[in-house]
Image 1 (cartoon, rainbow, N blue to C red):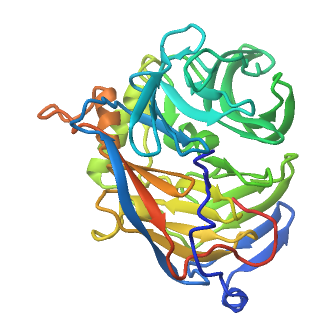
Image 2: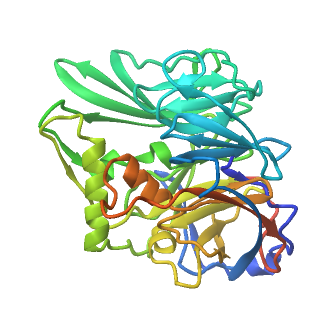
Length: 421
């Protein structure tokens, strides 16, 4: 079950009454670029808070060592699979928190990978792991034995490739990645978000960019470097949504065949300015990431990336974490999510009140549970060799919570079966 599909519909009580939708004060605009859903900063149905209860935790000072959690998925029995991108392995945990096994390992052979960046279920029950660089998809069975093979789709004229994320739908395997190619003596990077059949045949294209590149003495720009490849999700009906802009609050939604469905906007949302320490931290991270390109520099943005996270729920609503709720959350609140109904209307804000920090800690949703990864940022910085030299980072823990019903939270929004993202 994908983490990007938050299946809380059976847990969250209280339908959004249809009269509340009449309070939505945005507008639908038809223009040559497609339908634009222009939202204000006022959610039509107000706010609600999810209540949680801790079930178990692993890692920390215990026997299980966790490096950098890149992804976390579960199966139908709530068995948890934790992809460790630093240790190049997957920890398998039972629904009650009992450790079961470690699968995968570092290497280049079948079922082996390095620095895994994403993980997802294949239609045949195998686990897919994306290795960013050099890009490939590694398949293995839940018991750890090597699985089938899946080759990245080579772009015509391409050479090096990277793989960012993958998700499987009834229509095929949706992938984001990039290929480096040469045309007329010039170098380009072509990034894509597409659907492929299991034999690698392209079925649909949602977004693609082509930008000049240079090996050596190149200026990287953050608004281009951190593009859509990690900020997209898939709806239950197969539609695909992505945040293409760095600073603007804007989400494109495509139909499963690649045609544009709509654009969800919040034009009055103010980008969050970075502090000096925050800018320095990002500079350090990106300088390390791009150090392979000799003589190059990296220009960070003065503001945070506006959309931090987005995912669909099984009921068709879209949940979005914005930069304000990640980087400037109130002291008494972990974070919040903007909730959009299936038409793309901003209908509610959902709060999470945990003893955690939305900057330092990571969060994953799956089924009726929430998984908090403590000290994720420090672990990432340490893996880059850019942590605080005065002290080792705290050991990473994964804490599992159940999510209880809460009055006023949305389970449905109108009668449309369309989903937005």
